[in-house]
Amino acid sequence: MALTKKVSPYSTGLQSTLVKIEEVPLAGLAGATGAAGTVYAMRLVNGAGSVYYFSLFNSGTMTPQYADIVIPLAATSTMVVSIDIGAPFDVAISMQGSTASTGTGDPGAHIDANLFIS
Image (tube, rainbow, N blue to C red; front, side, top):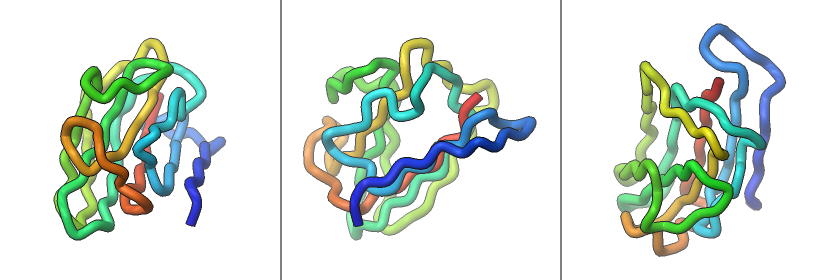
């Protein structure tokens, strides 16, 4: 399956934007949400049999060694990350998937992400 990105038009008291990314790539998604915002929660899925990594950048570009947030994803797991005060991204919300914490190694089709943003 190819990379897909969907932005929900629905809002609730918890978020004004819901972004669903299937197959987060090593090349990353610059400005994946289309705007700056604050991330309050994420649902991350690793379908691989080894630890992979999901990185967020407060930038329109991705330089692996400068990731703002790096989250290790256990093998074949689903993780829900809740950030009660939110993680603000005042430039853009960009993301990348990788097989190493250094932001290298293509994760293939193994990382999916849902971001709840306001």
